[in-house]
Image (cartoon, rainbow, N blue to C red; front, side):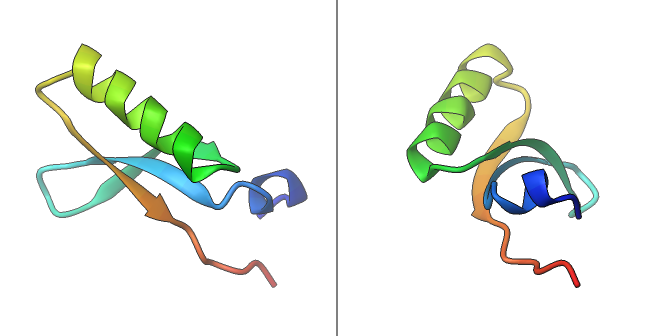
Amino acid sequence: MPYRESLHHWIVVRQLSNQQNAIVARFYRRSDAEGNQRFLQLHFPASKYAVMFNSTIGI
């Protein structure tokens, strides 16, 4: 994982029908991620989005 990505721990994921998640965006602040989730949910109501904390540590 590049250093730049390691700084952005909050992610917005699109929940897919096969129990998998696709990362849509990464954020440094949780409030920014939640705002983006609300925007996506408003403009794309057929899809489901969730905010998650990405705690994977790159070695």
